[in-house]
Image (cartoon, rainbow, N blue to C red; front, side):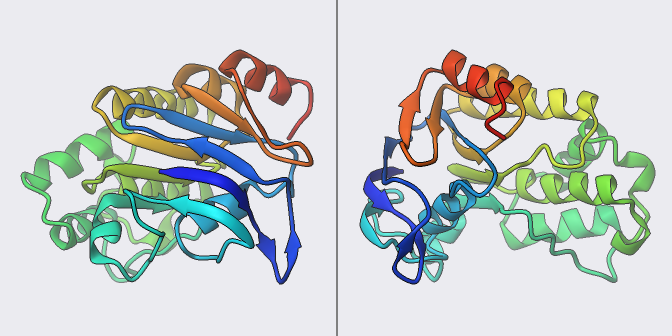
Length: 223
């Protein structure tokens, strides 16, 4: 994924200064900044859900298009909008996601994620029977269970306890070490420090930062 002087917003009003960045395989780019700075708007524009006001963004060499089968197959996104099969249990839901994406050895993959995200004891429960934090973990499992080249996450740490957040950081490290790319919004300094390779500070002066400077920005109150 790449962006050049990418201006995002609503109507004709930009929400932040233009962004320029490259996201290559094996990299994790964390977007940080104050609430309302435009981080989520950048994510949605990069996924083709919003049109850029100006500038360019390319995903796998092409303009983002959610109608593109190739892009849908390559991008796994969790933008904070939970969507579960209401009549399927947790395990059945994850197996259905696997079926839809042609996952080989789906049972093993589902079993591993149920264990990793502490959902095994909830495998037979319906989504409506889960707590808010449990639903958040199921949403993460739903996106992590499928094959992808690029992972896009909007504040994946929301409603997770610290142990699960640190586990998530480890999973993102594994993602990049396997050659995947990750574009994420995060307010969690530990996740950014552990998993990110690059940081984009979004706001009135959108610019690239080192990971250390990005963590410092979060800790100084850019939330």
